[in-house]
Image 1 (tube, rainbow, N blue to C red):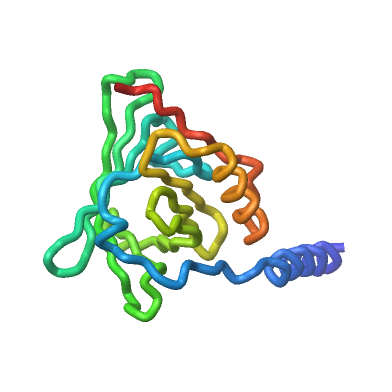
Image 2 (tube, rainbow, N blue to C red):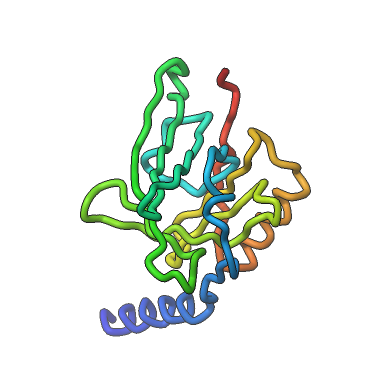
Length: 173
């Protein structure tokens, strides 16, 4: 019986892995245009942000080519109180500029892959190859619902399960 259960688990895992596509990234990114403040529109659950609203990410270019990252959000229960995290982003392979690494705590690094990017840098969708994390960001607090629908469809088509998608509230001053 144990052997049968293990075989079933292995088969289910294989089907999920083999059915999942390789996550594609955009072909190019102008990091200078990407720099600045972005508002989080939606995300999959992420511990740091679980009690926050009015979340922003600010990217600042450094002289050494790396990017300072500042993520900020207001507590849902105490909107006057802000939580922030500082990190560092960099492009490990200049031939694939849309696959960045982000580090908030040494020595741990995470994938930050740009999988959708508006030609005018008005919105972006960030993912990573495990399909566990996803963010949709915009230069404005609100994103056109039609654009959001397209991004969500593209995320689903890419292999993301959006059943736990969280829409970020932006009601702070």
